Image 1: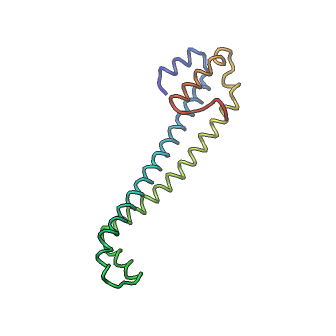
Image 2: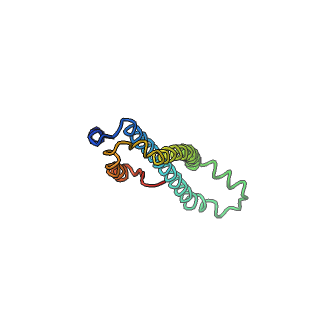
Image 3: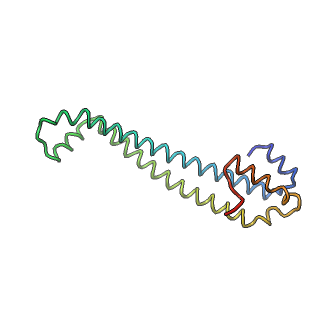
Length: 155
C-alpha cells in the first residue's frame, strides 16, 4: 500500500489496527495472484513443450520408421535414444512438477487470503468502530476493490 492512501486513511480516522488488517489483506491477495500467475506460466510451458514434442515426433521420427516394421517396445526405445526428445521429456517433467508445487502454494495462499477476508468482514464493526470511519468505509472498500481486487462488501 502506498503512503498517500495510508495518509488518507489517517485523515478518515481509521485505526492503526484497521490499516494493518488492510495491509495484510493486500499482501495476501498479491501473494495469491503471484502464485496463480506462476501456475499459469508453468502450465503454458508444459503445453508448449508437449506441442513441440508431438510435432517433432510426427514430422521427424515417424517418417523415418514408417518403412520399418517395429514393435511398440522398440519404437519407444527408438524415441528415447533421441537427445532432443530426452531434453523435451526432462523439461516437461520439470515443468509439470513446478506447476504442481505452485498449485499447492496457490491453494494454500488462497485459503489464507479467504480466511482473513471473511474474518475482516465479520469483524467489521470492531474495525470501523468510530462514527467517521464507519461513514467512509465504503471509500476504502471501493479502493480495495478497484486497486487490488479485494472484495469486502460480502462473504
